[in-house]
Structures are given as structure tokens and as C-alpha cells.
Length: 118
Image 1 (spheres, one colour):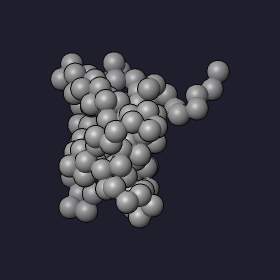
Image 2 (cartoon, helix red, strand yellow; image 1 turned 90 degrees about the horizontal axis):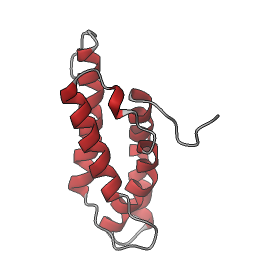
Image 3 (cartoon, helix red, strand yellow; image 1 turned 30 degrees about the horizontal axis):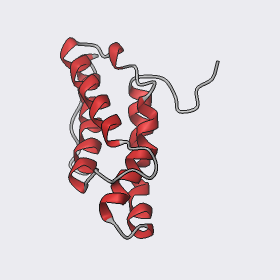
Image 4 (cartoon, helix red, strand yellow; image 1 turned 45 degrees about the horizontal axis):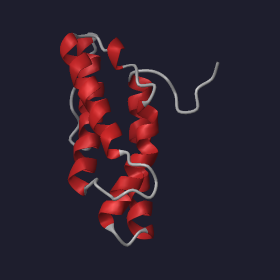
């Protein structure tokens, strides 16, 4: 059985983050900046439907991943709905996804150093 948007923990966070480069396209294509961020969430959030947050290595990370998924999906409005996502939401979401990946590595015993140029 396949998956249209992927299934996994880190894999799906990576797929979610792969959409970050598209934000400029949405901002240039749409006159309403918040609509641009809402459209970005509409596309990127698909990768969180089969996000295996329950497989995070610690209870703290499971809770944090579950909260991340919930917030992202709440920002993913159906097409045509009123825009609610903002630049601040986008910045939080992309940073939180990076932080989750880093913390999952650390919990699995991988030495991690946060990059100055994430």
C-alpha cells in the first residue's frame, strides 16, 4: 500500500519543510499576504496526516509533535475559506519542525549542533 504524502516521523517533517521554498511563489502570486501563508499551509500540511508522532522517542517529544500536528492542521483551511495563517505562523512552524528534528536526533543519541544558517 502506498502513501500520497508519506508516512513517518522525521520523513514527514522533512517533507513538510521541503515546502518552505514555495512561500515566495505564493507571496508573489497572491495579493493578500495572509492568503499566501494559508495556501502554503494548505499544501505543506498534507504531510502531517500520516505523521507518526506517536513514534517520537520520548513522551515530551510525542506531546510536542502532537501539538505541532494539531496546530499545523488547524492552519490548513479548505480552499476558499478565510485566510488565518500569518507570517508569524509560518516562521513558527518551520522553526518548530527543525527543532523537532534536532531534538529527535538528540533523543536517539545523535550528536547535534544547531547551525547558524538553518
